[in-house]
View 1 (cartoon, rainbow, N blue to C red):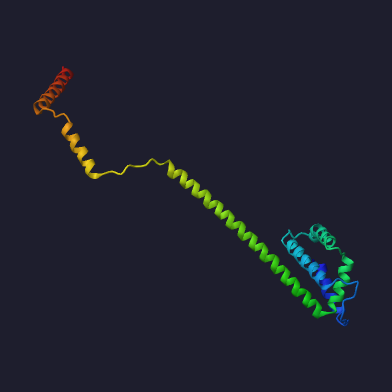
View 2 (cartoon, rainbow, N blue to C red; view 1 turned 60 degrees about the vertical axis):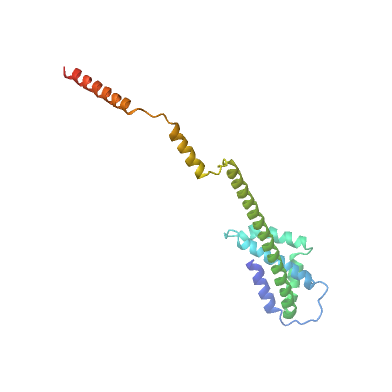
Length: 191
């Protein structure tokens, strides 16, 4: 990555004196150059996120750059020659970088849109899942009948009327027999 940046600025410095109106045939056209630079900057960004150890650019980046050049039907020599030419043409290079900026913004916007749609879909799936859980727990509850307080009072009055009443004399006899039993058990203990 540093190699390409150094190459770019050194070529711009040494070749600023050249001035031509049309693009030579052995130089990449502005649209193709914009595509190559766009892909190159994207690769640079991905390499920036990789672990930063010695030779990491060579280890991780060389293959990506070679694959990019093959995919865009060019090579490093053709790119370097084109970069040297456009470094001498600052207006053309600025126009190319305007295209690169637009392409990167479009790719970023489309990526953000896809990520937003995925997060909305995940949120919808989560909310549907939560809705199903709530429905299942709600349906498991038994329905509680609507209680009428007047009916409940009437039932309790009915229960009072139907309870068998005990005779107070029987209660007294029961108490006396319990007391007699306790007194007898105490006498047995003392003797």
